[in-house]
Length: 179
Image 1 (cartoon, rainbow, N blue to C red):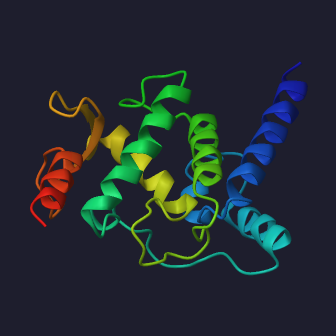
Image 2: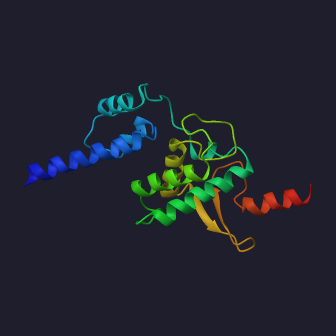
Image 3: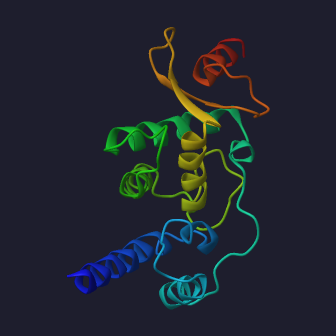
């Protein structure tokens, strides 16, 4: 019986690895989720899917992801989708399936933004790495989704960011009114 469950666990991990790597998640991040596969196996799977080597280097920090106030609007949308799709408390653990669903749905909403490379645009998350880092930031307490009583929308706060921990939607609306 344990042999069967061991095989099932390995098969499940391989499928999960495939789902993460086909969205171009860095293998260093995927290795923290997929326990039954070695980092070398993950790199080989990545190469087999994309016919290129996985991206190397340090993943971006959650504080470095937003590059404009408007980025918070898109990030709050992504986190709202993620929270709605999750079957667990996203403040204590990452729901891998919910992150995948939220990313795929987010991509259908914004089909023309670049997924693989980190563009210098305002639509964030710009790739699955950034989506994963945001979900990780929520679990680690670096990021939180709050409700604004003024505009009645969800907004995202990133602790340690250069942006004030206030509703960026209200700030953007005020800036548009004064121009």
